Length: 191
Image: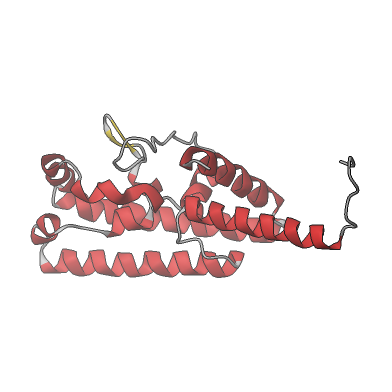
């Protein structure tokens, strides 16, 4: 199965499960997504204070090369909660599938945890000690929110959407295999 197929299956499964949540749990997810996005906005502001975008443009986004598994179910929930059009990744580019001609396909508040919490040495050296401490504190708060979301929905969502989709398909196949063990054997010619 290709990454494009896993992407589509994963998106459909998450959208269906989010829509099926009981209202109280859905409201809790929405509140937590908003909190996550606010913290990501604060992290982006720290990054902007040291002109991180210019640093990234100069190196060409070396750290972005391994982003294939960074986009998570939690990141997808942000798109669903805000009813935003989801981008189309390019899994065949050999680089991060979420980078287009103009850079990252996601606004900073929608970017994955790994993408917003990682700063290279070049960016970190530009941070004053108080900014570095503020950035670190924001990253800790963001992680706490991700862990709270995982607890709320009883799933490990910090793993990428593609990885979660693989687990979902494996569970589905295992369940079908278990059902097949209880069905009577089919005779020749039976479908």
